[in-house]
Amino acid sequence: MWRCAIPVLLTSLVACTPPAVRVIPIPTPERAFDLDGLRIRAPGAEWYVVDHQPRRIGFVRYGRSWDDSWGAEVQLVVIDFDYRDREDFFARLRARRETFQGDPRYDLLEVESRRQRLGDMECSRSRLSVRDRGALNRGPSLYLLLQVIGLSCLPAGHPQRMIELRFSHRGRRHVEWHELDAAAESFFQGLVTQAGPETSPNGN
Image 1 (cartoon, helix red, strand yellow):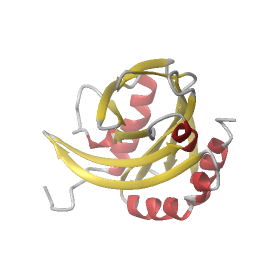
Image 2: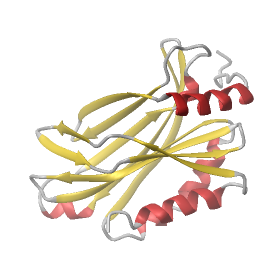
Image 3: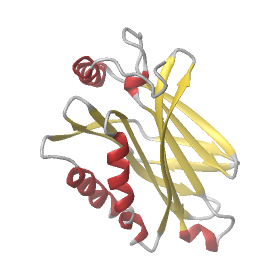
Image 4: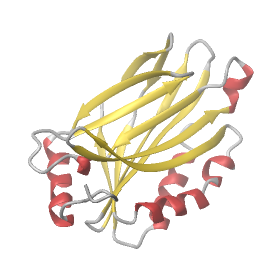
């Protein structure tokens, strides 16, 4: 059942954009981590790249997180858009909040996108909060805030392309960094080259 909302979400993503959309799976290993004393497992997690022309790029990660102490299954979703037209995408995504709001198991709490400078990197951040209603019957609310730093935020010629995942639960954070493989790096680098340099809203 945990996959039920994913085809709907991917369909919504495709429906939001013109026909030239590619969805590319990038396999990732199964992972488990400790979060605020809880052991969380996310088996079968995958990355999907949704590409609309060379000027817009997004990432969707989904998987199943199982909280052993509460016995609650939680949907994990990350969405991040960089380049131009990002706000238009998120405006459309907000209009499709029923993707999760229509599912009695989940509450879609927030979708946020902003730009931020981190050291020598100009990054975009997006946040989607999903609450598992089932967890409310077993203990405190379970919030998983997942953030991704867009790959294109890194300066040209950077030796690595990294993804940062941030999991937040009751104010405690767990951070993971993942390096892209060569095939994914080549794909993203092609998009960055076609799109040209990005500038921040304040011109820096």
